[in-house]
Image (tube, rainbow, N blue to C red; front, side, top):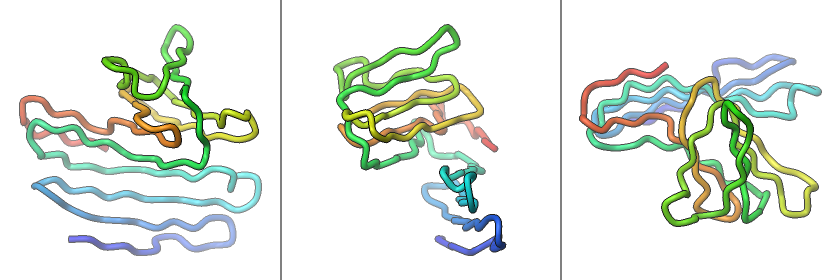
Length: 142
């Protein structure tokens, strides 16, 4: 199942909802874009009923910004990590991860409302772990 529909369309904001399911798991993702100054960011919200055993669910963000280092937020500060460093490519992040272009002109920050792990396997992209399920138990996420 795969369905895309517009759920909000007004002068201040538009939102599209994408629903899909695979391997026993269901996903509903809402993508919002606002007008004016608020339109400088894209908001994603996810409702996931994760039932896929022994698998991680990762969100992929391919970006135009390219840099060999990304910055990750921890409770005690920040840490910079290089791209795909062996045994260190998946980094815990608490509220955000940032990739600023090597020239410093532009970039992107992924903001989250929870602690998760992120990684950067490529020069121009970020990946965030949305759901982790080692033992295969049903874990709803909203």
